[in-house]
Each structure stands twice: as structure tokens, then as C-alpha cells.
Length: 132
Image (cartoon, rainbow, N blue to C red):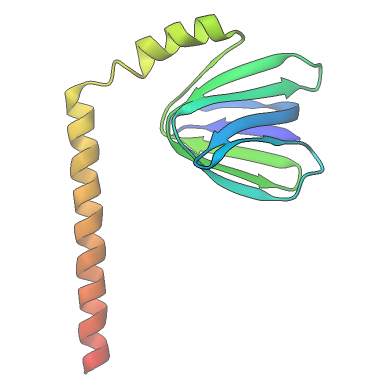
């Protein structure tokens, strides 16, 4: 399979793998090349994969989505960090993920409110057009 882990700013992983282990909202799962197509929302956590050479890789993920379609597994997340071992990954996570400042959290909350308001107004507009 081909695994790609994408953030809005970079491609964190793009390589051939034998398996992918991740945690979805309903628990962990393993994907192998001949498994059926699959989609899962991902909470923050660690994605584990085994390369075609048998080496394990680890990627810390912020929330996102995993899609398996045929022989391709694509993971799209807000933030991700890759490391060959879990000890180093923990250090990277503490530096990258936990260092989100208050400004970024405020921007995310503001964007969520704007999206909600846009959808509400769009639905209201659609309801008025149907009445005419």
C-alpha cells in the first residue's frame, strides 16, 4: 500500500507500507493491502505503520480523517510529527503540539463560529427561496 500523511503545509509521510495501525473514534484498527476500502475520523493519537522493509514508523496526529481506497491510504490532519521511535516522538509532540499558543486556539474558535454562521445563513436563504 502507499501511505500518505498530509497536513495543510506539508507531506509528512509518503511511502510504501505493509500495514497501518490507527485509532479511530470507535477504537483502534489495522489496515492491510487487501482490506476493503475504509474511512475513519481520527482523534489525536499515534499512527503506526510497517514499511515494506519491515521497519516500524510512528506519526503523532492531531485530529483528522483517514481514507483507504484501493492500495492507497491517505491521512489528512491539522498537525503531524514523524519519528522512528516513540521516545523521540513524545519529545517532538511536546515541542510542536503542546506549544500551540492562545492566539491559534482563538483563531480556530472564531473560524468555527464563522462556519456555523455561514451554514445557518445559507440554510435560511435557501428556505426563503423555496417559499416564493
